[in-house]
Length: 544
Image (tube, rainbow, N blue to C red):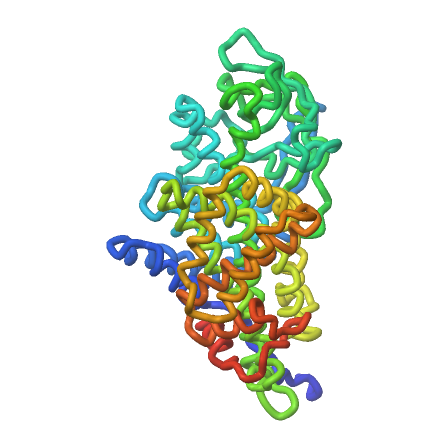
């Protein structure tokens, strides 16, 4: 007999069975903007297919399973032999396999590859974020390996393969490979020049044995790793394979897996090297210079990954508000809730637009665009990743108590949200990197100012913000202590310029009024009430 007291009403249906890509207007417009017309149909089909999978009940279940069943470390087999393996739930492998098959590790060798990959990474991260770590590192390893043509010829086809094979075997017998990275150590953290891992040369050309440790080494079941160690000539980059060509396992002792705030599906480990075979990448003493392009590429993925988390959180908040009634009407029609949702939508669209613009600069690969990236990537990484956590937290609140419950998916997004601000250098590291570029590379500032100047004269608030920024840049007094303030303004001016040029007028108007014109409070939902907020919210609504 059914309980007469239990009738479910006024609950929003799940946001499922939709195309995550096609239902995101800011993203689809960015792809249309940056992909050449002759490639657009192919790219749209590819991304829509991935978006349909990302929005499916199956993919959402994979994400839940991968996080509810985190990886397990097995240091020894039943006989006491050291094996150093990590077991993942099958859902992890399905997510990773789909990412690889969708070209998310293959940006460097195909037309418009970076924009197409960035859009795909933004889409698929909304299904589950943790497996994006090895995807990102594999993608980002390519430019570092290209400093050694022989290594690149050997490894690049494996890393850009669209076939995923799990399991530890020699890379030469696998259809595709994944890469990780080991830079930080317990005594140094972001100060990698304090690394103590030693590299002793062998008789073979460019071969070494490593002894030391790495404090954070994610995805330890990858096929190879780029690591930093001290050689006779100074800090140097090395390639460490998990399995050697003779099918023996390299010395790669996993001490433990980190118990993290979020990112539960991904294994982040501490590893020890003790006579670990490695191949040098680049010259001795030039480790940072060799690996810096990998770092830059993963920093861009931090921007894209944060944009993905924001987009999914905002889509959930708007979807809920479109179905939930309170105080005599739908939440989405209430002026105050509409203000909150519009404010969140602005943050999400600004992040997406900026991330895809940076990806397009990688595709262009001109001297001017490379100079632009030198400033724009750390500035974007600083700001977008900083905005992720408050955006996700406010979106969660839009669902009320429902959002605080694990089944909603919002708690997992919230736990994930601080990661990208920490990974690949926290906020201070990004701000100081911007200062170094300003001091050492004047062409980078010129390229940045040319980019933001393309919107000059279109909005008086943007013009005023550019003028204020130039005043700040001219004043070197106390520059390090106010670096965060400066980098924040640079990122906001860049976002404002892009939205003024490319977003609908109601979006650009609201962004410039609040973020640049300072007609804004200190919490979301404090936009000027005279703006066209309903159009901003409707634009950001996921099309189901």
